[in-house]
Image 1 (cartoon, rainbow, N blue to C red):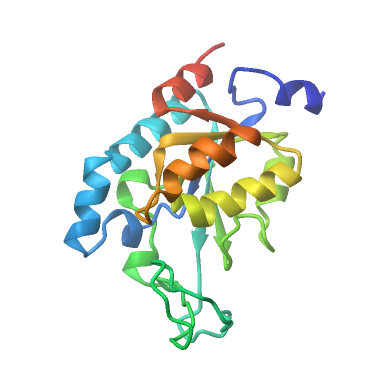
Image 2: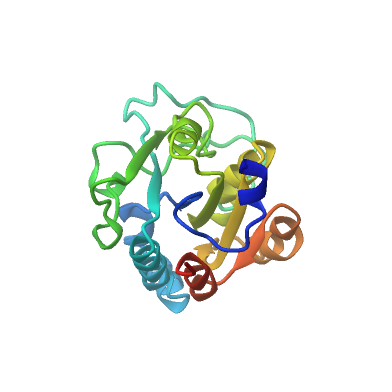
Length: 214
């Protein structure tokens, strides 16, 4: 039965869940004016609101994988990397650290996308929404075998989550105008060269139409 539902072209509540990745204040309401302008130019927040509204009309459960890193750094490890998160070389620089920490205003889900009763917040400590979280269990107990995913960054959390979902044999829809990355052409690369081999790539409005098909 699950194999059949993964092949359905519609996105109905019986087997589909919406995943809003790191829909946090710190990312969607950044302090940096350049990041504010970047998100506004792409209508990211309004697109996510429209996607969420469509999912709720159709009765889908929404899942919120959200970074919940300890302020002490006790759940973060240092490792050698060639660059920082913005691709600036720093072979001898400080280790990459989380942008935000739990219990801060930045780590709260943006109010425009706030969960309602029945939605599921999933605390995570790594890029992937699935790594040592209960997201897979939360999907499975609801009979969900297909996810619609949006948020950012495309080349970090979205990519790692989509790779994991693919290896778990989930059906996947990635929302092109609901994902973003400000790092060069990384966003375009994933949507043109990577995601189409693992998932369906759709715009918000197209996904919402498929949610609402009875």
